[in-house]
Length: 357
Image 1 (cartoon, helix red, strand yellow):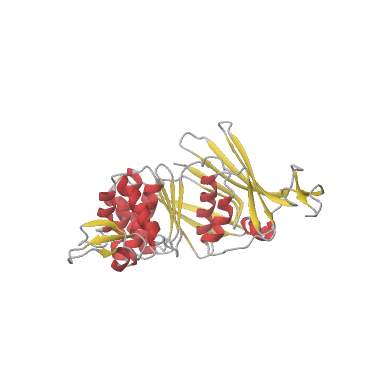
Image 2 (image 1 turned 45 degrees about the vertical axis):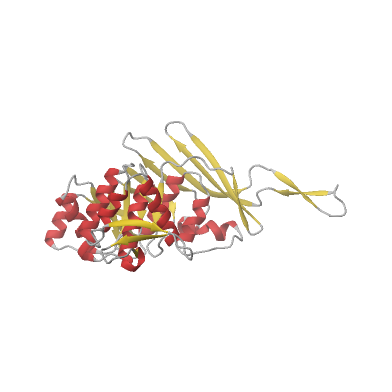
């Protein structure tokens, strides 16, 4: 787990520190204040110098951009689209070890070239062209332990290229659950298959029973005319595809699969309450807390729903230990400020009736 996180010159963040951090971190604030951007920064940091993630976060937002030039593809990553200042994403762990990731747009520094045939009729005649074009995205991470690594991404034609081809091992497993998108039925089946192979299917079943108490068991069914689909037995004489039990069932399965997949890592959940009725949120938070502890996973979840915040607080008060912090993001002038509330502060705000969203 990480205990603090610093974001500089990324998206809407000029220079923001969020600390302390708990096992479960709930992030609130008004619209367009940077809640999703904070999750994106954490995802990039988890991947260290994996340049694929710089385009994946645009895809998560629904932007399927065709590479044309570096500034149009990566410019939005930088504070106020100013690529002159490098991005810095840094974290400290419980042992105070520092890991920092830097991103910047810059010129081709290697001078490397490749040869391209100039004339098919003259195979002996070539022209030299730049391997990385005029500009490229540079990624570099440094750790207080002395480790460091560099990577680069560039555009050639309408394609992205990366160097090195295989990125460095990530800082920790990272899993992003977007607010609107959901896993395909095939992905849900694959995730549940991994959970079942690890012997953890009963844990997932108990969580889904919070939404559908009649649920007795889960199974992956593959028919001749469809992809594998997770089915459930609710006592009606036949197995029922999970999507027919409601959107909440798919959301809970995705949450459980994400936490399992990010064992000893970080799960990032955008708008955690999506697809879930407010009456089950206390039970859902208890389930998330139990899974996070079981798989040693750290949770960062955004919300704009006060009932969700109250439910999280109630869940941790009823079933400790209290491993929850609420972080409210506020825009002050040109920067984002973080106000962190612990158990005592949350309880006081809720009792008084203060709007803490």
